[in-house]
Image 1 (cartoon, rainbow, N blue to C red):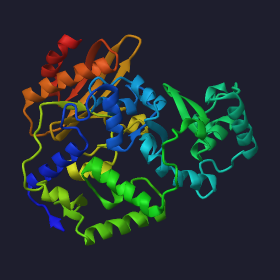
Image 2: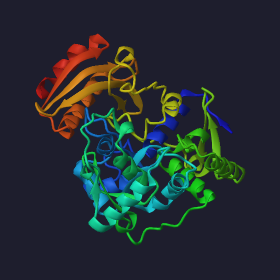
Image 3: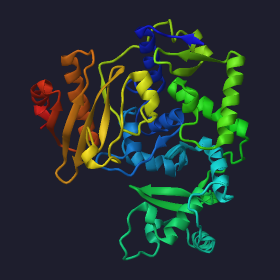
Image 4: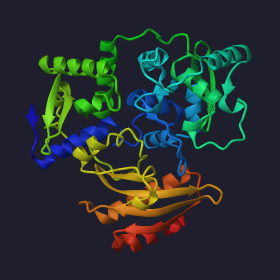
Length: 409
């Protein structure tokens, strides 16, 4: 095990992690549709989320890495057969080449080992399958509507629950998406013929996860390799594979001053991660999604970047510290704050309700310039024409930021 105690060592790991997430380069995957395809293949998944105070999470993640990305491209990639929708650690867009690794969870749901809905209406599920087979793809809103107001997705009417169950157990796939309205069709009609649909062994699944996580994060904790995956057999297989990698010298353990232990490929260390030339930094500031692959593992984020982040949309309003949907701000190789904002689409206004900047060692003028440039791009991405800034913390930065944003007001 390599123990790192010098602050510069931690800086090296941060840059390696950000470079692995492709957040240090301006266009690591190229541009537009082709760039988005490459980005999803590299990251392994892009998380879906329903919150829409700003552009949806999956579009936001791709926008952060792919110049000229447009939200319609996600559905185009789905239609092209480049990706598919399913569950990773959460609902996600996944590379179509990884389809077979969705099968163990589907099998667990279908066999009743894992419950999606505890009480499934199998008769209704068969009726829905027959209808789709005979009539073609089906949207959830095509099902008979109810006049009773429901509490939310957890209180779906039986037909929608049956449709979702068929999707989760693999009989159906999402063939098309408009916003958050999904269209379902039979798996055999959606899945491209060339895609490997053989059930992977637990060892193959573990190997896939380890390789994916090391590819897109650079360094990971043992816990992070199976983040939010509750399959004890999979966790055991991953742990066994890691132990074998350590014994064979393929993997190395790196311990930072906080005591956190990360796994890293030995080849990366040989190539100078700890003692070679650092990846260069640019002057950009990035506004990230709360569901971005780089920040979603909060414990890892805190130990590696000393950035304590929580999304507060699930926190009661009275207990929120920063706001409903605060977006992490990454400046060079530091997370320097968060921004609670809302895109008012009717008036085409991007309202920054609160901007919180932490006491970090950065050049103030350089940061403000980078922030304004980032807001200008973000405003355009949100299809807004103007920007308003309401609250700034600390307050002594308020006037300088207000003045800098005036051209965008």
